[in-house]
Length: 313
Length: 275
Image (tube, rainbow over all chains, first blue to last red; front, side):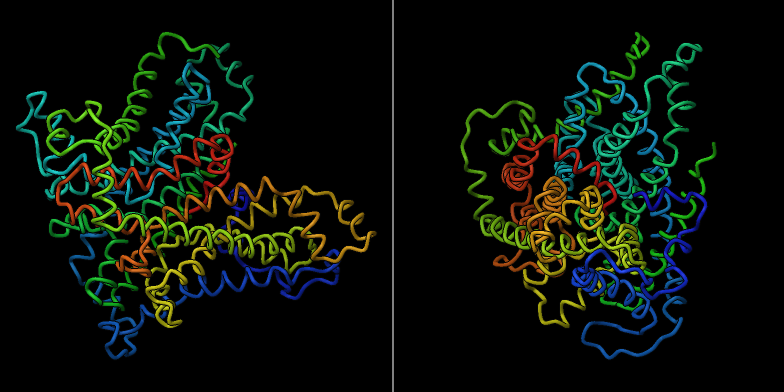
């Protein structure tokens, strides 16, 4: 986390570049043992970095299925993807998902974190509960939403019992609400855990700062946004980046478990498209081309968020 | 700071969200002991009897017992391998002053930014190429790699706080590098090791997508997170069985969380950077 915050000015590219001379400097490490880092490094390169680089290779291949012959395609896949209306549907859905879920999550979580950090009555209970979404696995969260939103689930039952049965819907199977359900899941699960992070960070802001603002006649609303927020601005940026990446890449699992991208393409997100083209449609070059685009989108998003939240006092 | 009357809306909103977090869990716990008819008639009523019929059905129809064992095996072995790789690496990086070590540490900390999902398909190819496709072994080898960046960075932070005099004293007694690691560094960074274990326990136990793609649907091999969603299709809309199965997968996590609440919360906050 510190690597993200220590150089608010530098670009990610500059930080990742190794120092000018790659050879170890003349100083001997303290009494040997550096070789002990080798197994972990090899493991990491083989299982994480290798597969990541492979995406870029596969994206340039024409590969219509696991057992089919492979040929070099160059940029053909990019052209196919960009001409495919399904891809553009996925782009639109992902854009909507990010534009709604991330800001709502971050703003609500920040206010909730501020609330908890003031230690109001019952804050221990709240804190215990806020961790719940961080503990539950994705399939279990999906089961919760399935039980709540399926045609004979909790929500429809609730609506009928208060006489609003006409509003009941097959929420997950209706083109107009499927994506909204996925966004609701992101927000429901995201706020709690993010709030805990903010509460922990806000807890280390000196109390005097808030008290001084109060003496000057500022209410909690003003104190929260114009005293505390600027102090933890860079931390908010880091958490926003993480939630952005989480939402961008993590949606594949929720879509797979709840809507399968349907009805039609109404809830197909970019990361689900990567999964679907690889494991259901077996169009591997296409899938990994979307993977590359997704990766680039992630990178651009990260740099943009860094810039927006740059510490400016 | 005092919280005045104007905080009433805030209290209401916060507690509404808290209720939204608790109600589904209560609903799942209550429904696990009820039949479908009871669930539809009185969704929020406490169960009238504590029969384990639903749990038995969930166990039998989705082979959940076996799945729990598989999950436990994958989690345990992955945790062991993670420590086996991360502790020596952190030891080396924390003590070394060389430039190479600095680069290696950078490489690990940049790993935070690689979302594991991105490389799903190439990892699947790697599993096929190594002949470990459809095995739990590949997951045991693969999961520690995803956990290494965070684990190494956390452990390095802990090991940097150990004063060099400790090592010098051990060296005077004739200790080898390995003995220093084993008898000085490892015991002194046990809190760090506990943090790494707790965080990765959660990640490994809850892992879904890779387990689904690589271990596959074979009931003899699959983990509990893969078995759980199959209850939806097997039982149709038998919510009692569905909720019983879900509750079952949450029990280990819940136990650990409640027993080690403080430490778990610290671990989660310090490990927020994981994907």
